[in-house]
Amino acid sequence: MQVFYLLDIIGTMAFAMSGALTAMDKKLDPFGVFIIAFVTAVGGGTLRDTLIGRTPVGWMLDLNYVYCICTGFLLAVVFRKRLDALRKSLFLFDTIGLGVFTLIGLEKGINTGLHPIICIAIGTMTACFGGVIRDILCNEIPVIFRRQIYATICIFGGIVFFTLRQLRLEDDILYLVTSVVIIAIRLLAVKYRWSLAPLEK
Image 1 (cartoon, rainbow, N blue to C red):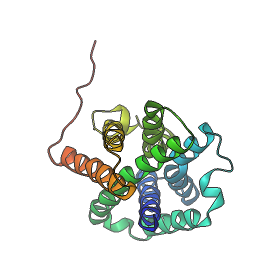
Image 2: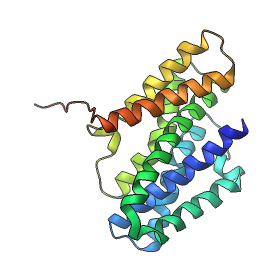
Image 3: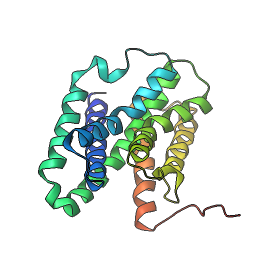
């Protein structure tokens, strides 16, 4: 679980950097950039904890999350001139965060006694909702509502998780396989440009 926590921290920092970079692209002032970074990093977890009645929400009980968000913000600002190289590394960490945050949401849902379908919804919201808030505040159509495969991967990962759970695998193996599936599909989707066709009138 220590590795799981470490990946959670890395994912949080990656999402904070993602938010900061998006905000800087929109020419926001430093305070605006920090706010976007913060809500991108904790938006999904805050929604999840609020929905399941877990208050205070997670990041309020562990200042390490606040520290890593501040670090992610500073890194994005300091290295903003190297955005091309930074975005490649950021994409990898963002993808890791996607897998880890989905698992965290699934686990929280299970611990609360929710139905697997609801757990998958909670996992997907945990992984994606910070990005939704980021895009809305930056006046963009959220990524998960566009052609790019994103939330669909989280849903598929949740299905894989509960399918493997029926085989009574050890938790570490279950977490590892599920996260690898989510990360691998995300990387393949970007590499081969998999997308969902938009609905038209």
